[in-house]
Image (tube, rainbow, N blue to C red; front, side):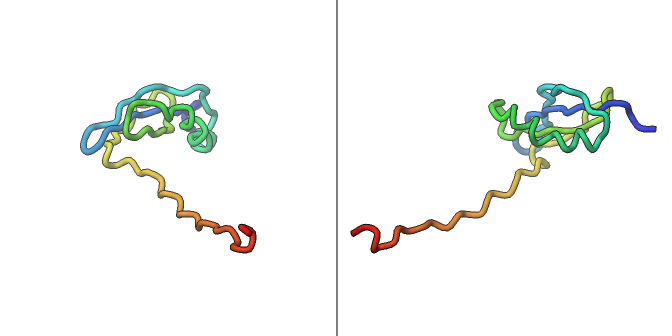
Length: 94
């Protein structure tokens, strides 16, 4: 049987080989790893103002040691594709 509770650790990451630092443990706790993982994006949104180049969320069993993550290993989201610009119809400017 697996752990009873999972938590989301918020990690602040630098660049290069420096290890990410655990900044905070977010509340609440989760009954399953799937529920924890599903909540990470919305929980992470509350921590965008931290003074680190990257901030990541890590689900783990309550009581477990943090997994070492280095700044260079943090995967950043792909930038959104550029939206095509819409030009006003030349006839509407008359």
